[in-house]
Amino acid sequence: MLSLLKRYRRPLTVGVLLLYPLLAFLLGGRKGRDPNPIDRAVIAVSSPVQQVLTTSIEGSVAAVRGYLDLRGVRQENDALRLENLQLRAAVQSLGESRAENERLRKLLGYAEAESGPEIPARVVGVNPVAKLLSVRISSGEKDGVFRGMSVVTPDGIVGQVIRATGGYADVALVTDPQSRVAVRVQRSRARGTASGTGAGPLKLENMLRTEDVEDGDLIITAGTDGIYPPGVVVGKVTNLEKKEHGMFQGADIVPAVDTSKLEEVLVVGSPYSAMAPGSTAEGASK
Amino acid sequence: MKFLVTVGLALALLTLESVVVKQAGLVLGRIDVTVVLVAFLALRATLLEGAFSAFAVGYLLDLMSGQPTGLFTFLAVFTFLVGRLVATFVDVRGAMSFALFAMGADVGHSLLSTFFTWLTVKDGGTSSLSGLPLQVVLTGAAALALFPLLRRFEASQERQTGLLR
Image (cartoon, rainbow over all chains, first blue to last red; front, side):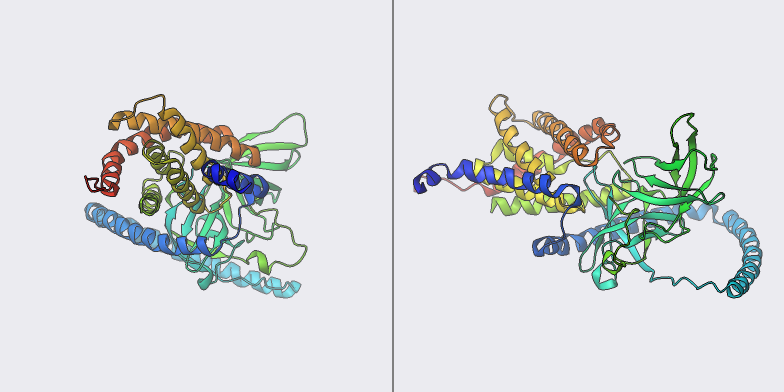
């Protein structure tokens, strides 16, 4: 037996190297695994290099752009002054509405929803595998970022943390084919699911045919999936398809955030570990 | 030593690629630098050394994907073995023939990766294939650019043989 092993040592070793990862994939499927010490060590080595490269490339690009942008800066400045005036007026009016809203909430006895921490992070790199759309950000476990937390920008939703290590985390984008987000139409409050397709727009699914939805409607997160906070912009409805048969209607959602040009993001919400027992993760990457 | 050089090179190339992809905004048209490395290993490395190196390169790619499932580790070793088999039928010496060899490896790698991803996700298969031609061309260009570097690394690893050996 031992002599057989010795004789076929090379093909056996190669066989193990080939079959071990295949079995791990077939048994573990798409879920992946939690980072082990070797993973953490490799990430700890590669991520700072990524960050340095990103910062230096971005710095060079910004210097060139800054020089070119100086030309039209006076005209832009005038336009911005005007816009600033309009925005200040709008903020004043919104302040009134907010105060009124708070009064009414108190009157109705509404409990104020606690807003969780907002952890800022920079995108330091994009995952080089085309089949899984994810980015690496410069905040990790030591900053309070954990698996399951959601990632947003002021423009809208970005994705969900799928792995966090010391100072870095990986974020699966909403455009990833595995991504599902519980959403609603802002105007009519109709509920559905936004699914990633891998490229371009998201798909609006599970929207009942009788629900009121139109092209151009703003889609926001419903908050019912326990992952994404409610009210974050997902995108706008386009290519609405009202079928004559079946339960559901379909549409595309043009994402509010261009995930291919991310720079800074905010990590919000609670990690998986903090979820109440029994809560579902409908909106998570299934 | 060769193994460590290959792993270091793979790590450097993947890191550089992830930054370049972020800057250029290429969502689907990626460059498979790891396939270029594995193709080179298939041509030049011994069976065990190449299999271990391909395993390590695939593991790095898996790790960088954010969701290490083992798929890319398996595909790297598989591509290496198929590449070795193909290399017995074709003569790959110059940069251009190496680029074509790497492009062929990339087509196989991408199709298998799409198939296995489809097995688990059951969706998004065709959309990821639409970016394949551009990805293969970019990988070929990367192979052309990396060929002299890989040859230099290989030359630096070769031991001097003389009469006393």
